[in-house]
Image (tube, rainbow, N blue to C red):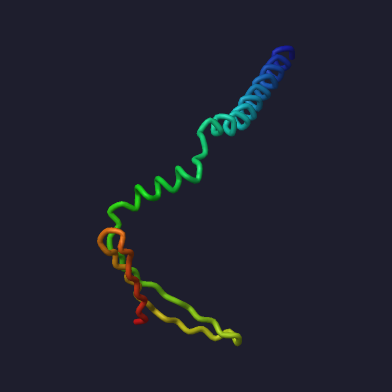
Length: 98
């Protein structure tokens, strides 16, 4: 009978050690994640500007669903084109319903 009591007692201790390790890992995760600095707005804009270099023309096709007050739906397919100009001249865009 004593050996059964020891097994239960040993399992009881291991059970709480496992619970402790799980809880410790849950609390440690946010602390470790805070070490990564959140980028500032200026850093985000500089990265956006860097990624935007070499931007070229773009074409996309989409579907617009118009819903009236009465619940009637009308579907319209469209094509959008964006043309990038050389240098800082800007861009041109057009939306055409198909």
